[in-house]
Length: 104
Image (cartoon, rainbow, N blue to C red):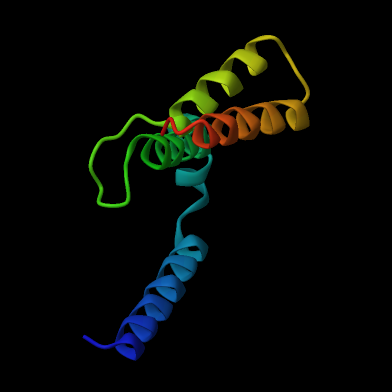
């Protein structure tokens, strides 16, 4: 499968998924279970993305390095209710300092 075939298939799949959103009955969208799932789905997807990007290396193997320490600092800052910018800067600085020190 070449690149253009992949692009065309992804485009068609995207169109079909968007079209399916228009034909779903309103009763399904108003169901309490659907509401609960749609409420927590972004949180679950973001947590999965953070876990994959933090604890895997370039080859896909499990790795604990400076990124994990940065995540730990970010969690502590969030628990202390620090502003978002402080959380990001503290996590990035932690990872950068550990990498500069040769750790991770």
